[in-house]
Length: 123
Image (cartoon, rainbow, N blue to C red):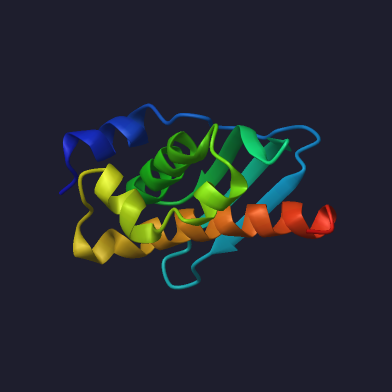
């Protein structure tokens, strides 16, 4: 059902954990499937210096969380805000249609963390 890239990010997820003192935190969930994602950001000079995630969910949810952290580390906040759910799925080489909602959660959690950072910093 999943391709090798999705399986790699599921079996060996990157950037798992929390950031103590994170200056941006985003949490989203999907009541229909039960997935919950939380993304922690450390932003310095408008650049995402560190990012970590904690996800409770299926293999696709974990893989998309891992991929979105890889995609935005080192990017500006504006660049990271342009990362779409479709871009996350494409970076993973595609997801089964029934699992596309997982990529939505990953991008949404990232955007919520950026929004949290911006609100805390008056931007």
